Image 1 (tube, rainbow, N blue to C red):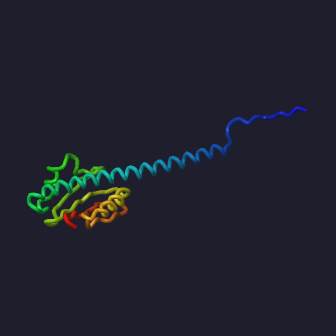
Image 2 (cartoon, rainbow, N blue to C red):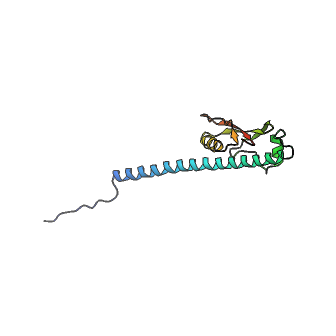
Length: 148
């Protein structure tokens, strides 16, 4: 007696579903990683700008011994072009607070960047009065004190 063996061609529905589930998980994980990396890059960029602003304010205050003349206009003349603009396109503003401190305001900080930026600013003893993050884009304000 002869047995006929029918060969199965193609893939089953279960195999297709498994491949689609794995592909979906990989896509979701890559999007999350990209968003995290992008937020970290923007945080690093804004902190580098704040460092440049602090250096410029320090050099402007050395002649007088006071931050009284430190404003957005005086800093803009010292820092490189575009150093007063955030990665998301808003302008950073600086205002003198006292002889030994000045305030930096960063408007419309995205919600994914704000917690990283606030945490890194809090790690530096020179920055005080840091605005907490909200649910919507927030203006982060901090005071730089020369000798905390």
